Image (tube, rainbow, N blue to C red; front, side, top):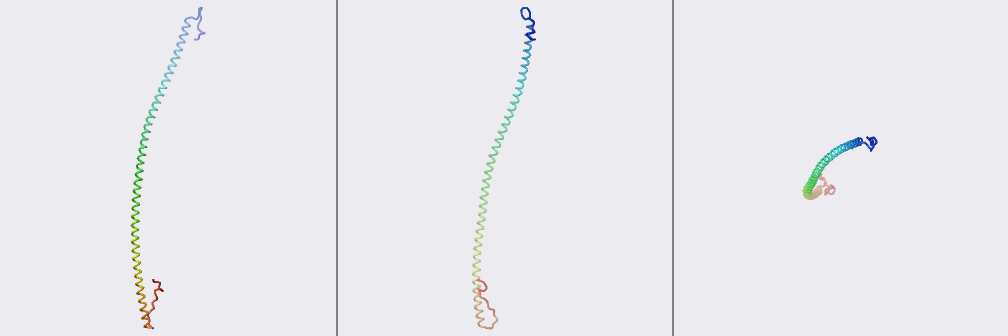
Length: 171
């Protein structure tokens, strides 16, 4: 109903029409209020649902954050252990290198000593051979002189003339 639809009497609007108009306005206002109340309840329910979702997401993020912190601590611990292990390996490698160097140096020293002993033995053998050759050459020279003497005593003898030491190439 509209204000223009209310019946008029002699002294103004009729009381029934005004009451009916007011009742309709109240009903409309009540309906709008209920509608707004329902919309507000739906909005509150949606807000509560959204708040619950956000709280759940926040809980999930907190759990994830805790898991990441634990993982970070685990990674840090693993990194520290890896660094200690690497240091231990370096230390062991240095010790192994020093031991290997000492073994190699001992082997080199032993071989050098053996070579020096072989060189000394070779020098001794060389001196002995030289002395033997000198002695042999001396005896050969003596034999040659005696042969020459015998050759001189017997002019037609069948003795073979021994060539000199220089022609044979023996020193």
